[in-house]
Image 1 (spheres, rainbow, N blue to C red):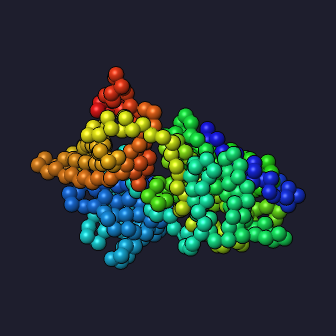
Image 2: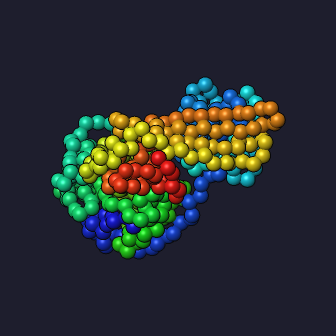
Image 3: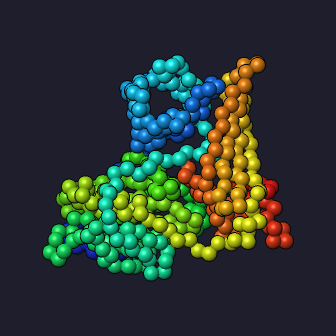
Amino acid sequence: MIRIVFFIALFALVPQATFGAVWSAGQKAEVDPLVGAWLPTLEGELPLILHSGGRGVRGEADLEWRRFGKRKLRVETPEGVQRPALVMEGQDKLALTWKSGEVSYLRAPESFPIVPPTLEGAAVGKGKVWTHPKDYFSFTLPKGWSVEELGEEIVLINPGLKEGDTLDAIPLMGWGLLEGDDLRRSPAQLITSHEREWLAEMRKDGMKLKKATTPPERVLVDGVPGAQQEWVGSAGGKSLRMWLGAIVKGEAFLFTAVVVMDEKRDQYIPLSKQMFLSVKPTPPERNRKLERALVGRKVVSSSFIGDRLDVPDSFSWSYTFKEDGSMKYAWYMSGGYGIDMIASCSDSEWGSYEIYGKEVFIFLQSGQQVGELVLEDGVPVAMKLKGSRYRL
């Protein structure tokens, strides 16, 4: 469980008589099956990544996409607009007819690194840095905003309101420690898995927010992978909206949220996003001895992702740990197409690693991984990672 109780303190600021008591569960969030990473089955073609929210990448080029009818996409890149025809076979095979011709794709395995797009829609401006008294983290308050109250796991923010002003928005920062299964979940997965309990707490105090009908959007927050989500509803007959952004750093879950009257969303959500982008976690003391012992070591894995000649055969990845605290994640895909033809593609991503106790936290823009070192006489000989054990 995530030890967060920010809603309880939030409700204390809201006049109870203002809100109705009707609860609406909404619809279950559905993910478009096109969202994800797709590896081409033709030598020389480029990998394709389609993010939820309509952004994506083809090779190194950013793009915007949306469905165009039932059998086409509308894809816009700096070079122009294309409307490739699409055919999906099940959930894992895709064919797109670009202007250059038809390209077949196979869905990439879960270990494929997908770097999320940068958070958009944040305000830009100067502010004042606020640091937690116990040095847990710091962030920048937008101009005119101030800390109203510091609680055990939240910081309530006054968004420039004066005595007598209408309470149109309640921004806050919050944090908690991850435990159990939550420790290995991404920010988007954490938001989804705890959505029901969060909204149930709001229900107790009369806020009617519907469950999100789309999954959380993965975003990049100053190089750290995170996620954002919005919920809509009503309170006291007025339209209400809540925006939440979250990141994970080590065992810490940090978030920024704002509950706002819908007509004021364009005023307060961009400033809340600006505050979210400025969050800087301060982790606990690291195990420098084991970090030095891991220098030069490598974790390697290889798996089959197809069993036919016309689809990729294997996907391999590796982590290489460097002396300066950096690490390199590399992947390689190869496959046979026909009798004498082999296609392959590869790429790499640089990140960093930190060790606390025996836990290894691997920080990449595509996501955080958590491993555990296996020691013999104090020396690391293996690493437990992604449900498997790998020799070092």
